[in-house]
Image (cartoon, rainbow, N blue to C red; front, side, top):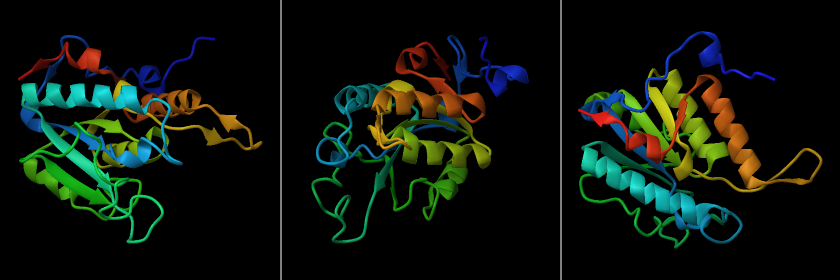
Length: 207
């Protein structure tokens, strides 16, 4: 079977490919929910260690390229079983703690745009391209990516810096995290976003 994406069917070219030029001043890396809840406990992600290590590389690439870094952190109400304010679980993962000068957005819904000032910040900074990565791929990454696309941004998801967890299927049997992750990325890549990795980003010309 020769599967093609909607992007391929309509002839939409890839804007991010080896040797392509990325305008640093109009680009931001959006790091979603790199928080300790995903390292242990009920939300522990099988691929967290590898994805978080790659996210650190992504952040270092952005710093070197002069691309803005935006941290999105989930915050639940006080007393919540996960992501409670000031809890260990809500704290950023080591090596991905926001630094001085990096924008921090706190959200309480899956999309980083819902009930936050992210859209206004992007407009004020002239950001047109978003490189999105984070946890979990099927939830907050998916929701934020779709919102960004619908708001007119050029969007890419950095696949090797994103991860999710096993989910129960309709029949009650677990769907492995890798399968969930692949399906969500395929869905986004069909129309909404380009799916890239850190190896590709390293080949871009950043102006």
